Length: 153
Image (cartoon, rainbow, N blue to C red; front, side, top):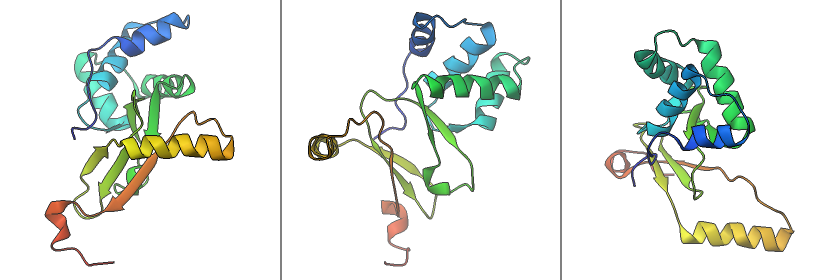
């Protein structure tokens, strides 16, 4: 499964505008980078990509925009099994929750969607009388390429 799914720029901007938030040129640029990313980006990667489009964008603007998007539930912050140390990665909140599978050897991240996962969330809500708003699940292991040379557990 590709990771993460990209979409045409504009959805995050439209969401923020519908909530009465101001859209600066720099904010639009950062939103475009988030929406069109073909991989999970950390803040430094996001800054580098945004600066290619607008060299005036600074680190503070990136972090403020990420904070705004998190507060409004439009992006998720992931640690992806801390494969790259204490880095945090960002992706737009997907339409459907998915599982992140991290290869502990090569660092490859794969996303997996499952009807069973969706049913499990429904069962949790029913059995525990708990309304789920966000779900994040990360699984660490070995991808098919690394599995043959990995120690068994």
